[in-house]
Length: 157
Image 1 (cartoon, rainbow, N blue to C red):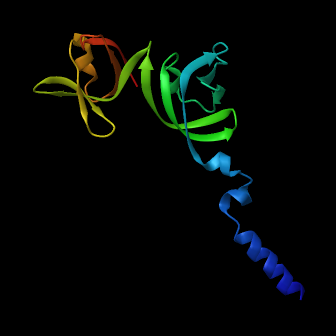
Image 2 (tube, one colour):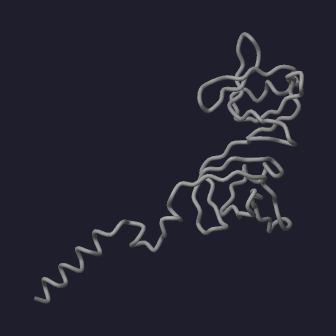
Image 3 (cartoon, rainbow, N blue to C red):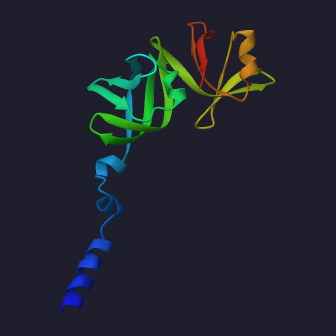
């Protein structure tokens, strides 16, 4: 009888979902998205990366150096929550910079000049680019444009 009971308990424990055994809640392992402005709080070397959203502030856990360079930009982030106000980033896109729509993708050069290859495979032409922008060909960048379509701001990701 003891053997049957022990075997039954082991079966129940073994059949639980992985996150139940490790102590993680579904909220910690589910993919989530977040949109807001990245801010750096505190001072070097103890800066904290946080995103100000329409509903509050969310701390970015284990922020990678490339994320820290995006301070004051409006971002879309994909990752997972580790707590209601904490988030681990797995992927990101720059959405706007200083109120202007941003294009985020890989800089390419072709017969027609420079263009950005977007994540979905489509392209966006770049007009009026500074001469040094061509040096970043093949790199992931973001740009914003003036009303005439010329490059307003850009950054390497």
